[in-house]
Image 1 (cartoon, rainbow, N blue to C red):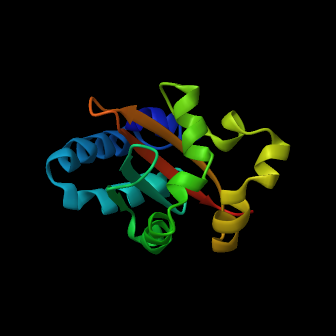
Image 2 (cartoon, rainbow, N blue to C red; image 1 turned 30 degrees about the vertical axis):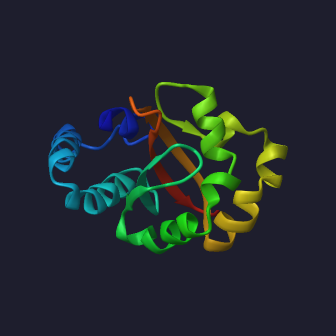
Length: 153
């Protein structure tokens, strides 16, 4: 999965041992959750993103989440303001059902993205512009969402 992220975002020039270190960290973080913030930042740095997040949701609430330290405040605000129920990005990504990473342009037309409430009211005012994400369905009916956020250009 980590190699897919890195190759998909154009970091083919990153040495294979760097990819392997990230893969190793992902396996470690599965057992040591405290490692996620640093790991998410390492992945984000590798693909020229501001930061990364991972959260569990049933698309009506976000009971568990973590993020890289660089965007922790943003995600904290996003969760507190209940954007999981107001955003279309996550809902459309899950509905698409693609087994891999997608970008906003995969789930929005250019016109839809320009008018999207989450982008207009939340992301752009905080300097965030684009993202890539994926989800993993859980047996509980929830999904685990991974997202990497890029700066607004």
